[in-house]
Amino acid sequence: MTVLELPKLYTLFNAAALLHIILGLVMIKIGQKKPHIVSMVIALLFSTAFLGCYLYYHYHAGHVKFAGTGITRPIYFTILFTHIPLAILNLPMIIMTVVPAVRHRFDKHKRMAKWTVPIWLYVSVTGIIVYLMCYVWYGPPIRG
Image 1 (spheres, rainbow, N blue to C red):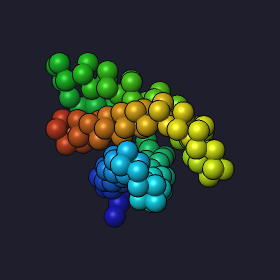
Image 2 (image 1 turned 60 degrees about the vertical axis):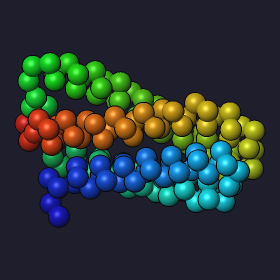
Image 3 (image 1 turned 180 degrees about the horizontal axis):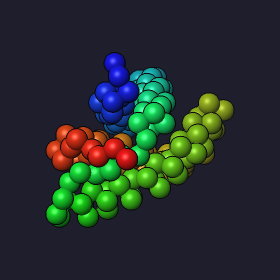
Image 4 (image 1 turned 180 degrees about the vertical axis):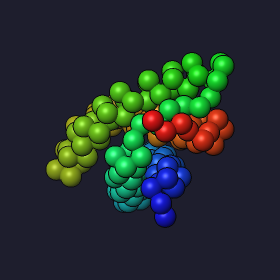
């Protein structure tokens, strides 16, 4: 696998994390605590793998410019410019949600998760959309 193939891989990791976040939510809503924990741990592992691949890719490939034109540009940049700050914010929020759960402070875990999960879901979905717009639908991206 080359560095230029990493966006496909990290997007698959992102999609797998998204599916496990949703599965974890379903499990806790129906009172299945152990499957919830398993799904959320798997989501964290996939998110960690995503982040590692993403950072490695951009360190080696550099900045990627969107190749779309017309109305797709403002749509893409609106998605991207909401995705980026929320993705940055989401990492400490995930940590602040997981730590109380590990410490069996489920009251704090639940309060924090109410904020973290919607942002994590949004970041995951918009990350997939950014990949599709940049690398599939309007690609290949311009390197620069």
